[in-house]
Image (tube, rainbow, N blue to C red; front, side, top):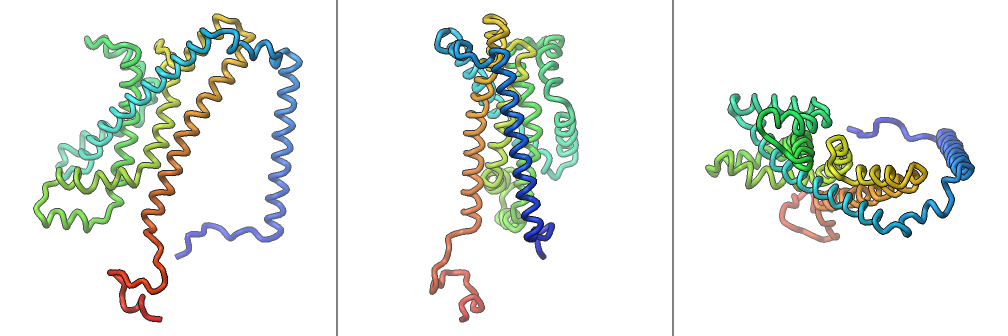
Amino acid sequence: MSLVLADPPGPRGRRRILLASLVAAALLIALVVLAMLRLSDKGQLDPELWQVFADEPELRTLLWEGLLDTLRAAATGMVLAVVLGTALAFARLSRRQFVRGPATAVVEVLRGLPLLMLIFFAYLGLPELGVNLTAFWALVIGLTAYNGAVLSEIFRAGILSIDRGQTEAAEALGLRSTQIFTLIQFPQAVRRMSPTLVSQLVTLLKDTSLGFVIGYTELLRQGRSAVEFLGGRYALPIYTTLAVIYIIVNGTLSLIARWLERRQSARADGPARTPGDTSVGDTPAELAP
């Protein structure tokens, strides 16, 4: 069965695609030039504005501390989300309905709620129940709850993609369901889903910017504080720098995800065989000239 969803474009179609691409590129360049001219007219491209990072060492320190706080919240949230996602995936795959049912309900509820609502609940709702949290842990709990539910579905999909014969062989050997999950299914699911996991980490890292609503000193809030202190005329240089930092960090994680994907694809394809190779597993039909 062919996996092609549409016929490849012919010569005329390729010319139309090329023309549309050139027109879109020209429009984009025109918009960028127009925006730069408008910014120049308003003095936003003056060199003195962009030298603020060289003139204000406290600003560099402030943004560096914000970046470290962002990475700390993202790393903590990801580790806890993996733990929660693993537990929920194992529960959803359980053969016992009283375990699978509540786990499914928890996953669907957490996935259906906005992340910002979960953060507000952790910061404002839990203290009403007697659980007082800092802004850091309120943000981490919100990130953990939402991303743990998402990761559980990723893990479950990876486990369900594993050949059923491996599970049946393990059961024939007398392994318990817990052993099958921890020794056979979960390690393979993590390897298969590693590119998706890294991509989810990129999303989690960007979501840490929501911490500013509860006063957590992540990168975006530190940048906003710097703008309020230095004045609105420095907003463009500071926010542009923040955007570049986010792009660099997330771009690095995306490169890691693509590298893992290529590695998994190469491992799945297996080593190429040379002519005359008669390794174990070849059938007579494959060896026939």
